[in-house]
Image 1 (cartoon, rainbow, N blue to C red):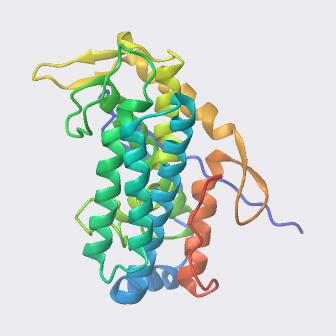
Image 2 (tube, rainbow, N blue to C red):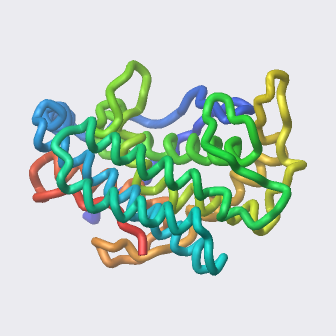
Amino acid sequence: MREVQVLRRPIVWLSEHGRFHGRLEGRTSGNVLLRRAQHQALDREEKALALAKTFVYAKVRNARLVLLRALRERGSSALLGEALREHEAVLADLSRAKDLEEVRGLEGQAAAAYFRAFGEMLLTPEFSFTGRIKRPPRDPVNALLSFLYTLLVADAVAALEGVGLDPQVGYLHALRPGRPSLALDLVEEFRAWWADRLALTLINRRQITLKHFVERPGGAVYLSEEGRGEVLTAYQRRKQEEVTHPLLKETVPIGLLLHLQARLLARYLRGDLPRYPAFLAR
C-alpha cells in the first residue's frame, strides 16, 4: 500500500498590525529522539557554531543576489556597490569566525550594509527608506517588510513543527522565552530572496501604494485592511511559483521550500547528513 504524505496547512491569526496572535494546527509529528538530538547540538559548541555559520552564509549569499539584481537594473550605485563589497568581506571572514558572537557580529555587519542600500532598490519616488525600524515600523516600507517577515516566520514555525523540531531551540538566534529562535534561523535563508524581493516587486510595480498604509497615533505606520489583503494575495501567489531546488534538483513550489529545508535540517541533526545544506538561491 502506497504511503500518502499529508502537508498540514495551519491557520495563523495576526493582528491588524501584523503581530502574531495564534495558530491552529494538527498534532506535532516526529519523535522525542529528534528533539533530543536538536537540544544536544545546542550544547555541542562546534556543531552549533557550524549551523550558525551556515545560516548566516546563506543569508548573506542570497542577499548578495538581490543586491546584484538591483545593481543590474540601476546601472550604477555607490551604496549598492559598497553593500556588495561588505557582503563579500563578510563571506570571506565567516569561515574564520571562532564563536557565535563573532558570527552574529558578521551577520549584523552585512545586514547594516544591506539596509543602508535598500532604498536604492526602490524605483518609485513616493516611497523612501532610511533604515530598518521594527517596533513599531515608522514608515510604509518598514511596515511592509515587518508584515512579510511575520508571515515567513509563521510558515517556518509550521515547517519545523511538521518534521518534529522545536521552533524555539535555535543556534544563531539566542534563546529567549516565547521566541521561535530556530524558525528565525531558518528564515534567514529566505528573508532577502523571498520577502524583500516580494516587497520590492509590490512597490516598484505599484501594486502597493501609499493609500495601502495608515499612520497611528505616535507615528507608527501599518498596512491598512486593503493593503494586507493585497500583500497576502501576492504572498500566496509567490508560494505557488516554482523553482529548482539546488540540492534536490527537482522543481518545487516556493511554498514547500521551508518544509524541505526543515526536513534536511532534521536529517542533519539525526546524523543522516554530514552537514546541513542551506538553501542557496540561483
